[in-house]
Length: 497
Image (tube, rainbow, N blue to C red):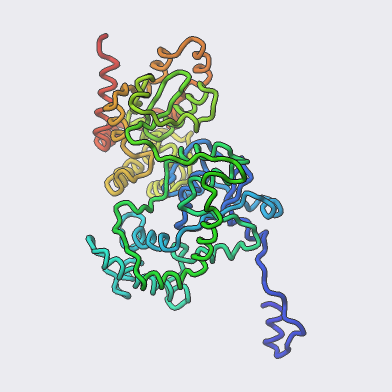
């Protein structure tokens, strides 16, 4: 109990009331994310682009995608909190920022993602409670009018919850953005807006990360919340009034940030910046070496990272510059390759990434199911086989549930690779990729290729003999279209000339 409170309890009024409590910067700095490579500091706010930005911060340090980017909030291994950064350094930094979102859009995102939607990312217990207590209608196919009624009811419940009038704990998904900012009010934070993030962040951090726009574009894991496919909720006075009352300070801060950035889309600090243009329709997103005139498509995993790094070496640039959007006409000027992987080898690599080398959600669940002891690379094939079997079973369940929204390491290759083949790209197995590339390169580039030859993927560091015939059959049955493409590429390579 504080000293002045004790005196009041004892009936003795203190001579002077203590000054108002102020947050301690040393205690609050851990709220910020930072990187090893750049002195930048980010305060995350739930439902304000934090999934994407955490993946960006991970990529800035590791030069590759987060191994479980969809669940980056659960698997923060590889992300850095600013707890060990000197407090004065953060307080004086010009590169400390957060991202604010239109409160109405944030509320609707929460409603459709967590309450109305019945997908894997929703809140099932809260859904059931709100159905029962406030009469939410959560059946499929609701009209826009029903959604408006649901939103008004939900907003009223949130208002009570934030005032402590329910026994449900306050959750970051609906807590005010301003509440998060108040906790770190001693820091001079620059607010960006989610709807302008694609151009505001590259410009804000241009002095320290000049190529940030390209590096953001290369991050594959985006926030799942989207207006696409969801019913349009018309502006209604009752809902608008309720949200503006609950989130009054959020509206003020968001509008102030938006107005501060208005007029700066074409220039900031006198420096001209290009607009970020959507990928042109009909163009193909590829990894490309413009010097060698080689373009490749590969499913996002360690092989895609290897190919992009290789092409960056050939062009003497960074790996983010290896991404390109080529028109069908431009593609004909390149040796264009669609790289297919053996689905068995690919899933074994995913096991190495998600279970052996990282403490991801996959790691925790697989380990808990097997024996509670984490596997190590040096373990025997028999030991790894038990974990891998559970990993394959878990991947099968996830693919049935999430389909194309499953984590990138286990998504089927077929949609991307078959589309590339239809565009005229040559189908090649990854095992033959390096030899095929050597046959195309000119002599002066072969030395570069020798220095940056595609290496073996991490899964190959595991012992031989993990995959039994039963496991192989399970995996090929899990990815029949991928396996058909792989066998097609193998047959083409072994066919008589």
